Length: 259
Image (cartoon, rainbow, N blue to C red; front, side):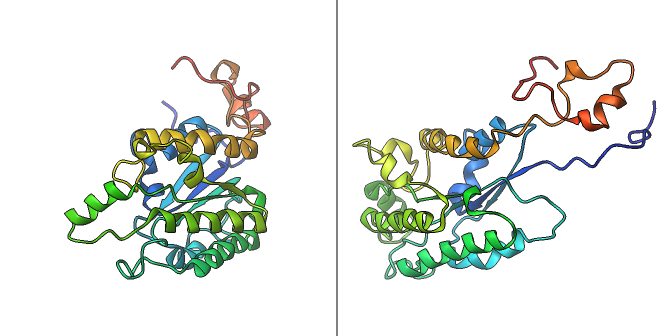
């Protein structure tokens, strides 16, 4: 059997990337049924979906680490889409949770700073999606707090102020906004979207994905499947199909139906 790589030639194949940057709601998004996992599944063979979620983080810390996650000249193409999804921790009440709390004006400034940084490293505003925190179900979250020995440390009305600031920053910067706080509360009882009053349940993950996908799809719709559809590989000389300019599918959007 010939060793892998024995046939020389072919251009390096760089996968386009979608970057998910956020707090625990992003970190947990690759769990079974998560919105990030659903996005990765939808974009298989078109994009790598990178999960850069950091449980418990706020925008003050996110602004510091963003340049460590992505920078100009890192040898990779700029992401085709970036989600920035913070606010659930920034909006914590200062008196009850001073470590995670970030004042509203600083929160907005931090979001704007991150969008501007991305632009400085070649990621234009129109590829960025700012996602607001979801609404807080106070009764459910209070049970979680009490179980951990705390008082209720968030209020839905305060979360709403941070959501409004997030939407405003997106408008000012020319980025897309997904106002999850408002959309979820169109249902009178939004508690089924949350597993503990703050984090997303399976239904909440599905809800987020259903509203995020149209925004992502606009940014990736022109991307073909990478490498040819298996039926299009030349049987006698597969190198011609797999190593040359024919490395992209002639059936954009085609799904493999056989292994």
